[in-house]
Image: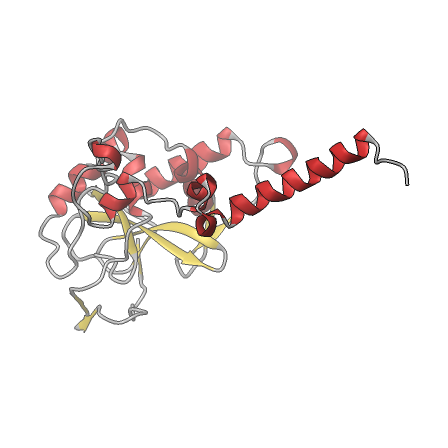
Length: 246
């Protein structure tokens, strides 16, 4: 029988060496292999351990530094049972630089004030935009913005009852068609208030409005509590009697 060739012997030895390496890696802990460390369960990082409530230093005595992330600014919140901080809430409303809105609020003004009003007082949005291929253009946005402003100055196109407190409330509503804005002259219980506007000084709102604050309030809860027409707003949906006042 011929002696095995050197190449064949080397190949067999290589396969055996590779098999032995795999055995020592995956079962090394039971064999006392130096590769057993590869099987250790990764320990939690110092930050993770700190977050879980453990005290002390990190790995090998290093100092653990955990930075607390500040909560986003949410502004003043309203308490529907009291409504005793309207002046402070209004101050947040006019904490900006005024002028027409941008971004999402710009689009929301467009869909809420570019159109006509029905006889029952509700708004009918128009899609007869004047931009390229029937798309909204800057002129359409400005038309909606000026309509919103003019309605306030002329004290018209608002919904509900006038409580005589001298405030316009800009309110966010929602229906199957999406979000929209409308104006009331009494607290919008069961709805989401975005801004207060002084009936005696509408220009102040448009000169100083903080549109970002209105965007933040879009993500807050609806106004609950208080009393209106002897009905307390503690249930959803809040029963409201809509009336148009011009």
